[in-house]
Image 1 (cartoon, helix red, strand yellow):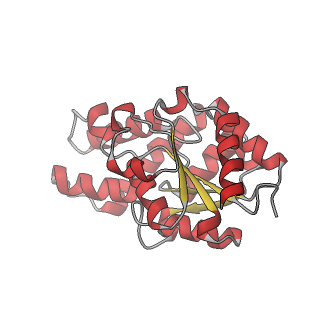
Image 2 (cartoon, rainbow, N blue to C red):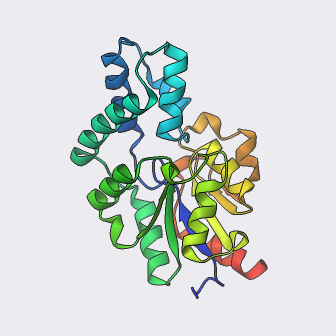
Length: 231
């Protein structure tokens, strides 16, 4: 049992632990350009933040009338993304500190992400976070992606933790909704600052409205300590 009263912590990956959204945007832009959609913008990409890669490309197929299968689009996007991720991806410094702080206290931790297992593994290895984060769940392994709670519930199951004793860190509204649906508390660190007022974030136990620029490992840890004492 951890020193935080048996609390387990589940991290979203992209936009929460690591600054990978620029790579996901570029992978999406390159993929769509290959299929005749040359004007995919960052604003277009922001609408997909927090949604699984598979669900993203399925929506592309419908929205842009693409003839390629979802499986083909997924494979092409993942290929572009993995190429980019191997060259450039960074963990947010305060998030790294938070992971290290929790690991030092023996807090059970997991990663639950909408990315593929290969992408998750590549990023964790590239950033060195795989040393502390060994329990990993991809949305590809569960029936439904976020905002459904499946990926978080599976992470809790693998950790041997009760959902009510889990705290999720999330950057996107669908992830905050998934945490709430799973019966878990949430520390929300919005990736898109303009979305901080989204109703899904109102369910978070701690909302860091300023995003990663405002997040600190110590403040998040202090909130966890208070949560453990009152739960």
